[in-house]
Length: 254
Ligand code: ADP
Image (cartoon, rainbow, N blue to C red; front, side, top):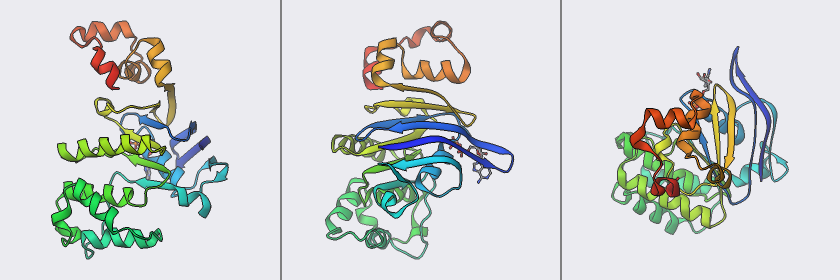
């Protein structure tokens, strides 16, 4: 279980995250929603241990910055940072060694195959297109197969095949009991099976709902998002968009 407890992060006078609290239950998929600048990346970077903040973050009761906690935490950043002089496969081998993985060649091949990078193995980091860099970034983050994985805007810049493949992998990881937190500002992209949605705006958590709660309220995640971020009621939303009344498929898909 990952517990974020009253976390506040300031950049000078700017409060990027203000008293943020939530829990990720083991084996659950949580979506972290919010417009640009809501504080999603900041809370993810705090969880992974990149930032100083006030409050506490624990992983199975252990502070997140300890080596024990770090071993189970994984993070896929929004922006890839690749080494220009390492090839695709060298990036993967570097990560495998850093995580002291044994018998990793098969997993490297599988990931590169799934994200259509198998024929780019010998290309250098700076020879890859933006989209390929994003895909390699994903492969690097997925390689160690951590128990808890944070994915920051993972669909940005991906082609349709990679989006499909990543959503499939997220579902596979969920079924394998992994704990995941997936951030996005694109509400339409949340069509995977999620357990909890956390909506942030202006550095604070505006709403936290489980799938069951939202189904009980008979409201779509999109409606809830605009209700809490723009103060629109369900009635306002249906007046604005009469053609977009929630379809059973959409409801089932979110
Ligand atoms: P999101 O991921 O939801 O788009 P961020 O966590 O990136 O939001 O940003 C939250 C707030 O913190 C924004 O106001 C942003 O400008 C600010 N911020 C983020 N990173 C930095 C930084 N390194 N220095 C100063 N301000 C930052």
